Length: 382
Image (cartoon, rainbow, N blue to C red):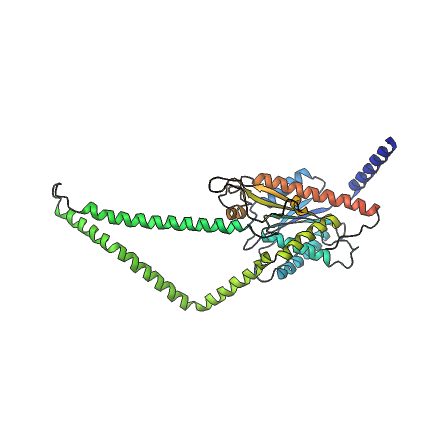
């Protein structure tokens, strides 16, 4: 028994020694925004993550970059091609600058919302287009971290709660208009003569009469104003009918981009393939999802923006909650995930992301040791 333990400890020490002798890699973390996002979607999150990792992993140079803003329209596959071209060019540039040859730049893809779908599909495209199943993966992607990505769709309650808020806003607006009208209507009674009071001056009487006339005309003025606005809008719409036509094309192009969210079979297959990529290639897959705690009586249960896999599913262990106790609804929490003012879990999210990146690095290093010392392991099909 003692001999067995000694042998195991010796093997671990040898593996660690091999890891320590490996040439330094460049860790490249690529952020990808989601639907209608911009370069500023992630705010200061990438720079903070780079600082955390540089402080905690002194043996690995770290660089965070943001994929330039892109048009979220048309087929998602076309966006994958554009991103893959951009990433391969960037990888070559970084490998040449860093030295050490191909594969020395280790990449972690971080996508927010539908940017996570773009990251996942690009990763799987690189895996599936290798010359053969024994060929190493290049670019050397070691992790895919998603932030509130609807891999299994958007939670139906998001639409219900959003509609409720729209109704609340409409009711509030109606209340404001009603109060304004009541104010003007009330002014009429305030300016009516009261025989029990002393007579006011002629100037004051004239002012009161003017106020009374305004009260009478106010509803009609509102109606006429609405008609003018409606007429102006109709005229503008006709004059800019070509713009409206192009606007319809714009909307249809963007709806085509998000159409993948309604393909349940493809969504399940994507998640299964990401799990297989972690098993076959050691590519860490994690997804952080916003979680709004219960706030009865309006919301007796916790809320999420994305649909979660069943607890019995192998994918469930790859989902990590990112609690947000500040945002009032799922959409606000989703959009403000990288804003410290809108997300009280912002700093915890940064630390958890850094931990996920470190896990990807260590898994990749240990896999390198395993591949160089063991025979080929058959892959699961992706």
